[in-house]
Amino acid sequence: MEITSIRAFNSWNFPRLVDCEESALVYYKTLGELGFAERSLLLDFASGKMYLVSENKLRRITNPDWLDVIGARYDDFITVSEKELKLNELGDDLT
Image 1 (cartoon, rainbow, N blue to C red):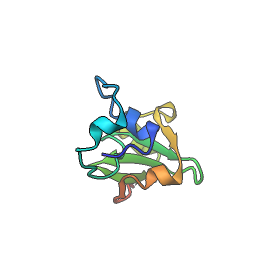
Image 2: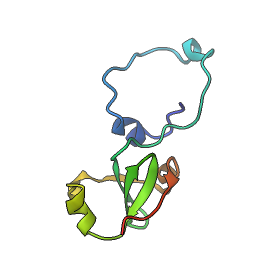
Image 3: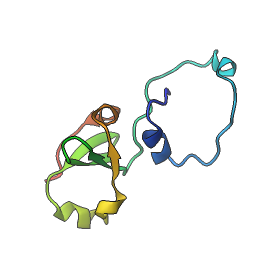
Image 4: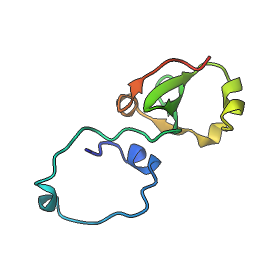
């Protein structure tokens, strides 16, 4: 996977990283871009819209009661750019 966003990468909480030169990875194929991990809470910087990543899709939170349902607080959200939002497909809204 290609890492295009450090915020998306950090959402996965990988337990261990290996430091190496890019030339050591030349024989590995890039399968796509790394999106945000399941249950990530994202806040679109430009629009202020809130999203939950569910089944690898962005589900827009349109009702504030959903924050209670999923046990989230406003502080739990990661503020992201429009480009970063496009790392995950758009799914149905949470209404």
